[in-house]
Length: 156
Image 1 (cartoon, rainbow, N blue to C red):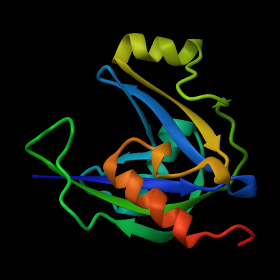
Image 2 (cartoon, rainbow, N blue to C red; image 1 turned 60 degrees about the vertical axis):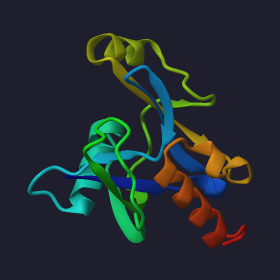
Image 3 (cartoon, one colour; image 1 turned 90 degrees about the vertical axis):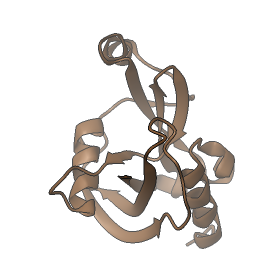
Image 4 (cartoon, rainbow, N blue to C red; image 1 turned 180 degrees about the vertical axis):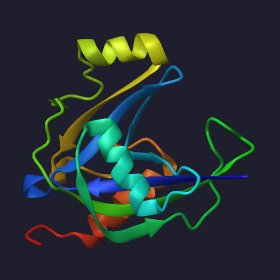
C-alpha cells in the first residue's frame, strides 16, 4: 500500500527556508510543510489545501522539485510505502500565523490543540546558511534539503 505525501518548499527573504516543527505520537519532527494526498485530489491541489489548513495561507504552487525515487517505509504504518512529492510554493498573501524563532516553540493555542489531538505544529524560517540535511528529520526531506543546497546558490 502506498501513502502519497505532498510537500512545499517556501523560501522567504534571503532564501530562508520554511519548516514545520511538529510533535506527533510522542516524537518531535522538523519537516517541510505539507501532508497526505486525499482521494480524488491532485498533488498541487493537495498542497494548496495543506497550506490553507495548516497556515491559513493561500499559495501558488510552482515547479516540481523532487519525487521519491527510493523505497521508504512509513514510520507510523510499516505496511505502507511513502511516496513524497515536492514543489516550490509561493505565498499569495502575507503569512499571518505566528512564526517561531526556535524549534518546537509551541504557544498556548498550539498546546491546546495538542491536548485535544495529541499532535501540534508550529512554523519557522531557517536561515539559508544554517539550513542543511540536518535541519529536517524525515529521510526523504533530508534528500530534498541536499538537493536544495546543491541547486540554489547564494545570489540566485
